[in-house]
Image (cartoon, rainbow over all chains, first blue to last red; front, side):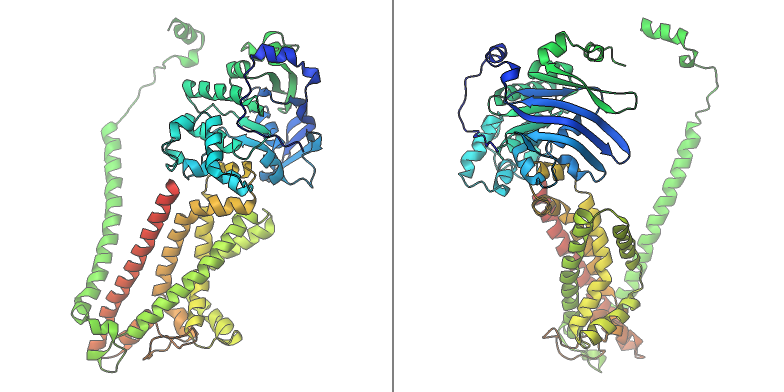
Length: 281
Length: 306
């Protein structure tokens, strides 16, 4: 497994178009590849035959109407669906070419590589410092913890706001700050991929904007997959868009995937166009 | 607005119908007031009964309350009889049963909530634990007599009494701990698992600290029960006359409620007063133990809220 070093190196941020000109999609390294993914909850076939690739150090957004299984798909990528007793996942998810869904793969190892930020900010009822440090500590971080916590909080654009109150409770922060704390917490385990499940849906517009700017910053060092209900957010923030919908049996299906610009300006599928222009349903 | 007006014309469902309404607000308020009165009455009855109970103990017992009741050993003579051995016996039994039921009970609760597969064996186990909570305490006494006193050869000792009492309160400890563990938000577990925590790391660092105030509430209630129970101790073999403090786990023992039971059964008037005074001491010990546990819980939950 390629272990990425997410050091303090700040690569100069290239403009989006610039970045794409240099690396066409074809030549990119794919970090995560989903092949024929099917998810069942008990008797209910929730997600049917999903295939897409996630390019390295890019933001990929998963969009689609409620109940189309985009969060379910996201949660397969770090084996969080293992925690749902009735869930059954079939197909293949490759992470740098290695099968994640194989029974012999330890989900603990997967989640340490593929971090996650949830819809509702859920900091631990501990201090800001411990919120960030805990994940590193349990995963055997042996470096200087104070520096590590500071670096993660800086990366999550939260350091300036909390540097004087690291011992204060993470629960005492505002919703937007809590979510950035959760992002810092996810960064602290040094993952390659970060999954975000509607990270801004519980936040006000200003906090949302901050999160989006932050994701743009993180893109240089991390591969990001974000589920969002917000079309503008997907258009603003992501490089690649995956559009899900429901078929006539209420199963989540993948309709179309491609560069965000194309999906939002010139989609191939009629259903994508209807959804994006608000004519869905 | 114009859009709404058009919609009203188009769909008759949305128009106001001409049905007459009878709000009868004052009648509804009266009904509400009557129910409030009934609930107040129920509360008042509970308080009055409790007050009467307390008075019936304080009235005969107050003048008999003295230091020598606490410091002295039982005596044939009511004037200088105390129940020091009973106090110590009760303290050791409560501590012993609390330690036993805390580790076994919380361990069981963690297993059932976090580890056990959700199948019919687990459900069967669960049902039986709930049933055990309803078994009469004398039955636990018999179990203790056979299992601890005879099979494990502990004799009629204080450890047999403590373990029997521990078994008695175990189902309640298990059930209340399960409730507390179940009420830990899912988001907290997901956050921990999402960082690559193992199940034990998640339980140890997040689930247990969050559940601890609830677990301790169950422990407080159980310990209050353990300190007042008499029947199982009599069955297991609490002696009626013990003139020494328990000094080892195998000492013979008596306990406060057993001593009270013995005194109240005596024909002499004086011993009845003595029993009433002893009940007051029992209540004081019980309330101070509860206060201590509540303080501890408060401290833990403050720490956890941060």
